[in-house]
Length: 167
Image (cartoon, rainbow, N blue to C red; front, side, top):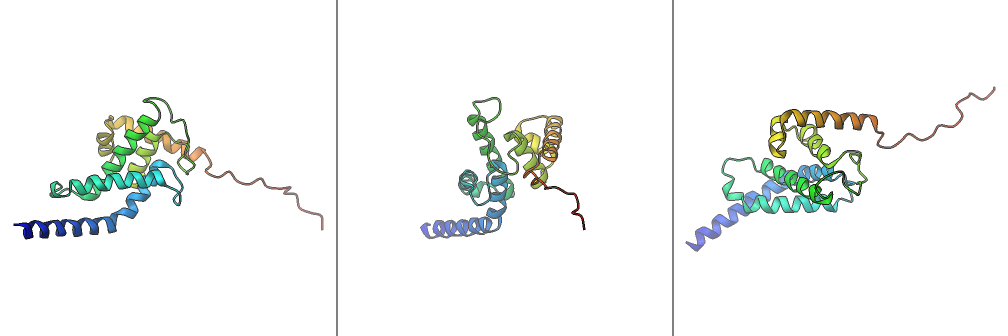
């Protein structure tokens, strides 16, 4: 009996390790986009990923047929949304703006943009994950795209005098 449990535990660990080896990089990138941290300095994203993977491992045997990547991604998104809600005191914008490319967006806008555009999650699924109507997700996504296209990530350097020198 104990040998069988040990074998099942070892199989579970191998399966999870294989999953993490294949999915952790993309999930970390997703978490980094959500937190808008720089890719090389992303402690908040790493914390989100670690907690999501720990929860996924705890639920591993109950996933039966469910895609573990989707489960882990939902965990990252839910934990990010919950932490963002607590950081800003329940309403309004977060007090501290992260330094990344998506910093011009609110946490909710970043979550929708990352789910929809980077992860390719359907509007309906993103809406269900966030507890919002589908139309609201569409409006927020459109607003975020407008913000991103109007806000330069790195302003262009000032150009000196462009007049041609006399020959």
